[in-house]
Amino acid sequence: ELVMTQSPATLSVSPGERATLSCRASQSVNDKVAWYQVRPGQAPRLLLYGVSIRATGIPDRFSGRGSGTEFTLTISSLQSEDFAVYYCHHYTNWPQVFGQGTRVEIK
Amino acid sequence: QVQLVQSGTEVKKPGDSVKISCKASGYTFKIFDIYWVRQAPGQGLEWMGWMNPNTGSTGYAQKFQGRASMTRDKSLNTAYLEVSGLKSDDTAVYYCARGESPSSPYDYWGQGTLVTVSS
Image (cartoon, rainbow over all chains, first blue to last red; front, side, top):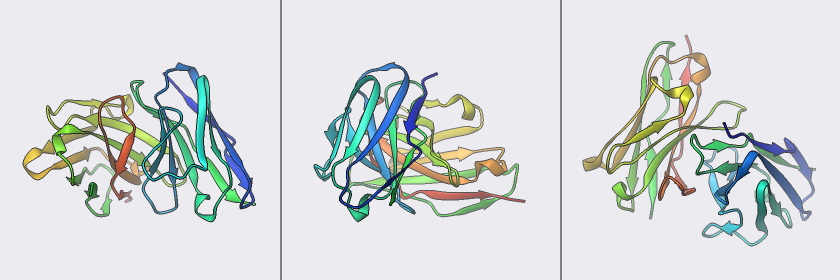
């Protein structure tokens, strides 16, 4: 069964700095990789899909790249509203699977 | 605008069942698949399963096979998740979400339903 492993578990970043989050698949996957942001008390929000396509309304400081087993989400200049938990998601394997999440916290 | 509105907080005892609703509006209900995902306290997102609202076809993560049931009422544009044999570790926020197809990301999510299982 596919496993998506995210690292690090927690990332401490100062506002305005860059954050790079990783997601590793246990086997090579296609480009059906998405990233979601979860703020406390809120529902998940789709950020990116197809590895690098920004969802509607997502600012361009969020970018994604990767292929095969390695995928990354980069936030180029962290804003206060970006401190949250981020999950990667492979959405064609069966069963579908999420990574365990990376918490981005204020340094 | 697209909305998925879920039913309210539930408090259940071990062994009980719970049925959560997810009412869709702002789009044609039968066109988009419905997914259920849960998040236990302090834990990550856990995929539970999928339903095609048009056909009623479903698929479940192995962990929930036989214990979760996803249904819909097309006349009400509403999807349901029922979980039976509740245990304390079923305490979680349960989300519905929609995807255009089985190979689509989840672009809209419900607000979540907290289910607490406690004796």
